[in-house]
Amino acid sequence: MFSAKTNNHIDFDTVISARTEIRGDVTVKGAIQIDGVLKGNLIAEPGSKASVRISDKGRVEGRITAPNVIINGEVHGDIHAYDYIELAKKARITGDVHYASMEMVLGAQVNGQLIHGSASAKAGTGVTQPEMAKVD
Image (cartoon, rainbow, N blue to C red; front, side, top):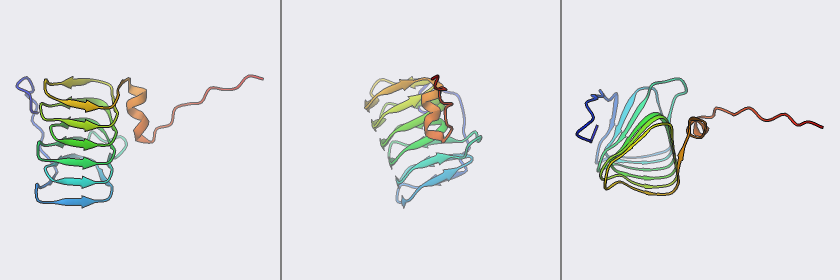
């Protein structure tokens, strides 16, 4: 969305404006853009094709779990992007980023770990991984 190479257009179902602060968890099915502040977790409904965009004025204080995530603002919490994440020039992340596919633009900052792999990205979705059977 923010890089010159990206030609995708997203119609956002929900926009949290720059003068708005929401406290509490938010669950989405479609696309959401945050220009304001969210103090809580942002979770895509399982099985949805939700997209999350945090603009350069936006801030999230909590975990983000969604298939597609575009960050150009601040996130204080872990991100689980189980399809794609884009970290734009003004992205400032304090927390771990779990991802399957990533694009990171010069200037983006991550103070945490970058963890590649669909299993780690899906860990934030509530999808449990099968346990290994114990052999006596």
